[in-house]
Length: 145
Image 1: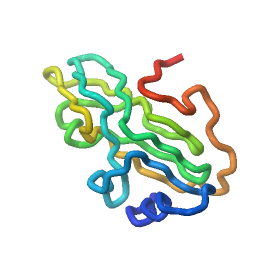
Image 2: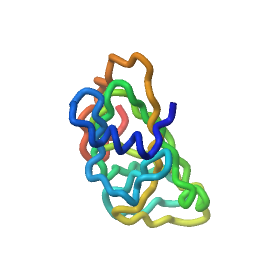
Image 3: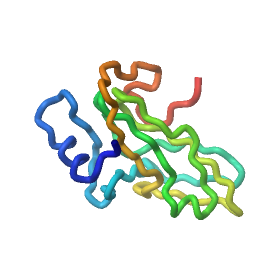
């Protein structure tokens, strides 16, 4: 099941730590009907023909019963930007490192706070084991192993 805006809001405002979703900083304009837009943490340029690692501004904490799928926003996709590695495991905490490949005709500027990807949240049935890999509690860009 994909979470709706009202369910995302309910999970963000939940009192109990168990099952609580964290997106910090949260901005209402980033909330979509069935997703949340994540923003770039800093100004940068996506060079034509290259993959650039871009940190999200938001710190995300997913409980063990939620997973996230990341999709490039259509405004970037129409300019030739592709997103690689678009899954967030249950139990993940940290800033996300986005792999954005520019296949367009020229360099593409990205400004801090630009909404670059949508995070679609999915319910994980009977989820009890959370992510505990090397990207846990990441800050800024985290390079591949």
